[in-house]
Image (cartoon, rainbow, N blue to C red; front, side):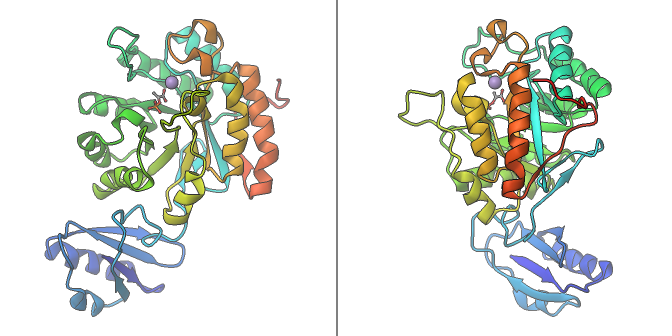
Length: 350
Ligand code: PEP
Ligand code: MN
């Protein structure tokens, strides 16, 4: 159910409706919009008696949200969600967000060398795994806390905000302490206890699409986080499994407009995991922006031939600079703008 408040409803009226919902034994989710506030109701098994709610002061109407996902739906919030960061960057607005960095944090030297170059090219967010989901238990699993500390030094030095993965509920709080955006990986998209716990934090959560997740399953993962009161959710298309044997995954760009149609949440595209091939990353990055994505998450490495993970799909820093210049030109065609960080060099070297 969704309570739509009148445009001129006061803060007191909104609070009174929320209190009433709590009294009924449900959970209110007030989501302010440009025109009016809508209050999502969760926790109800069946129909909420709408009569009482409709008679409360300031209420315009009470509507049933028919889709399985509610808080993630555009029915609840008409305008796009924009997540703002203290360095002036944002995800979901007119400005495109670019998250760049290595697959794994390998050492302080490696992280700093890559950070310097992606910051110079204008990245406002730095990525890198400290806890890695690896297919083999014998493969490099990440530097753990040491990796998180390196990431935080990168934030201090280059001003980029940090995106890093939380692999499990045990380490989630630690990751949340050091990161600006908590990444939940494709393999964990339906780890419901992890999603719920991330929903109790007050930090943006980036959810990568599961390898065979439908649009509805993807949005239900977001719904798990939002149902706990954390509305700062970012979606990321990173490719799905198909019969295709020319790429690691099939980057399903058609989900971008489909998601935009039904949800207000930002959607990023990951052309690195989406293709697995360095030579495909730039074309699919261009295509992702052209398709209407709110930004990109891209793997970049200064020595990809010796990277401990995902070297074959990592761009060289110069290729990343080229990518930034190209998407900057595509952006205005789709009504967007490429925002570059403060650390960006005046003359971007390629
Ligand atoms: C990653 O971003 O390095 C990663 C492991 O991504 P995914 O969960 O999409 O495989
Ligand atoms: Mn990777």
